Length: 310
Image 1 (cartoon, rainbow, N blue to C red):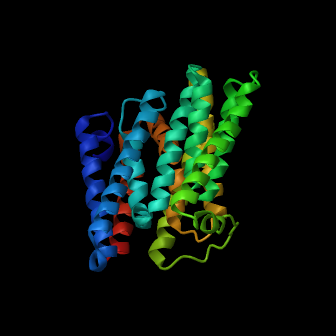
Image 2: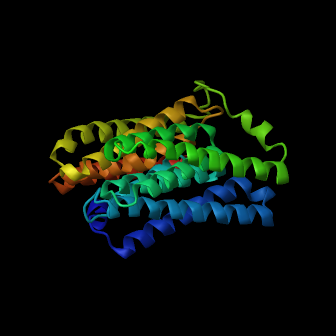
Image 3: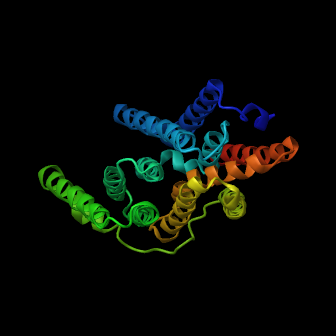
């Protein structure tokens, strides 16, 4: 039933998933902050909710605009499922903001396959990534994806290699001026993020272990299935899919080395995994197999979500 409903891009599908996201988000937020909620907290919660909804629709734009999926809503659905699989993501403001900025960068980089205004796209993507690093320093690893895109499309023009450094200088100057004028301690506090931490002893309960086990299996299936599917895709889309795969690997790297990590740091891999898994689902001819795969992931996500908020 799930796959048949989301096998087409219908407005009702987007309304349904957006509504479910709002409900799940508010349930978790009120569970976490109910006793201390204030007007400022309500404003922050509202802003984070808008950013999450915006991330959903940016994801849908990336897949549809660049032809990374057929006429279905699987990617939209899967991104939502991954969000509720790790409820802590719904309350981690810096992660939500930085991931939204990375998605904006990914949108510009994938669209480079059209070769329309590549310099502007390189600059925009680089700026978004460097701004994202202000919220989570290790997002800086995504700048690798910018250089990968340059190699794929416009490597012969040496000026393109300089653009990311111009973007870095721009963000650095603006951030320094803002810090000196309004937040003098920002640089000192920010420097504390610049550490590598491979400590994975953050699991607080068995439900977090179950959730990450489900996601690891799903991500492995999605990634390796994409390796086999890629040769059958249109040649002009190969670079776009490769960038999605690189984004997944970089997202994993950010998760592995980030300090004070928890499962919410996997958010940087959600969209690449959703896109890759969507392409795998599209290759399956029998609906009942799709139903089992999506139904199992959705049910497991809902159950683990409910068990983690009670």
